[in-house]
Length: 368
Image (cartoon, one colour):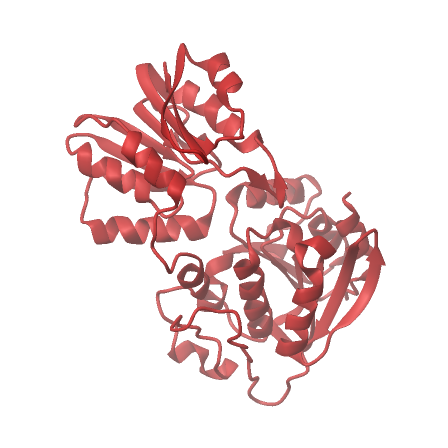
């Protein structure tokens, strides 16, 4: 068990009938510890990453947690789908958050979800911003307490001090882009009248609609044929897949991603494109399509996992691309120039060469 989880074990106070909410932290082994403490209570996993979700559900099944005591809602949809002021304890581990915006959104969800007197526990390292997040918690809830400190990690806790027939949900605007529709500055009892189809998290994370430099270089180097059956692994907002679908107008494109927020954005952009030759699937890597075969596979893989630099994700995408690629198919990968993916590519493909890039990025093509 990671130190963060051990700190939660020693500090989080639970009653057997508590309703517990994990904020994009299903990968934390503390989920299982909580499950063992609840008799009639429930656990809700507000989770974005389906790989983390599936692992948590499988572990819960192994320890015999009743299905009605464990449920899931997409992290980005929590405030749109769930009732307010129903949660006793909310928990977030900074290790599993892709960026600061996700943490700030987690504070919004907690302020919306917690009952009066409910508690939010946040665990994280000093170098992951736990001190600045503690200041945010003070802004949201009017109180914050440090419960434990160990080797640079700490657990901080805020209590929802708002009470009465209607629970106000404060949302400090500092640090958020202007003009973003944040729907939480409302009384909890009025929420059902204003639910809209756009998640605040989706609006915040994907609001600029711009191509990153690596993706632009990949698109410039990409060779697409009109009849290609193509796969985009880790599709994100869908820029690459939509570009391919326009060129492969007699073919088909499948886009997959483990992030439910990314899938929501990609689906929306596909609908706006008017293209009928694209499908979007939530998938842990290429797991959802391992039985299919493609002429073209592309990826712009992440190289951080839990805040730590890693080549593990890209290496897995490389293995899966080799598995689903047809004979004489093409695989394109864009990466920071310092990342050494060439050895893994040569282990799985007949020919590997660099076909684009600049001083910061490289576009690699591998042939099956």
